[in-house]
Length: 189
Image (cartoon, rainbow, N blue to C red; front, top):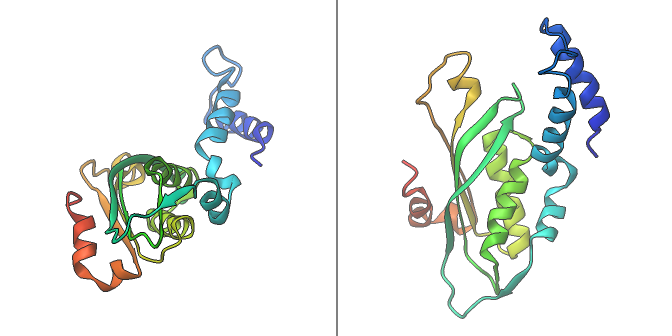
């Protein structure tokens, strides 16, 4: 569980280390606000991939001859584990081939959102989503494509505001069949 009291204490120390007065009017409640925000934006840290799959694994019998299911433009944000900097303007496309079970569409979005609510690397986020979706849907045929901006590149360091990072995670038939992978990449270029 996230220790909000410890976060408050450390944020207060960071403010002081920055040369700010943590007791001044605009900052007096900042440690508590940041602790509440961290509890919300890092909620996914509280769960394993298997627990997330169980939470959002409710599904329905797949129709006969079901083809790939693709959900595009899932918007989430996350925080880079290297700088704790925001990964934003993030769009995820997820595809899977049902094997007897289809997930409710909102469950796919919830899986992406919960996996993003951790300190992450974009590459690991794609792998986490693929692993969770595979377990929840009962299929190894999963693909995940993520495009995002990283404030560790846009707002600091190189300060290149137009850079975007695109990552791909392909499993099963998405790894074996280039047409399936290409279909997920559409719109991400």
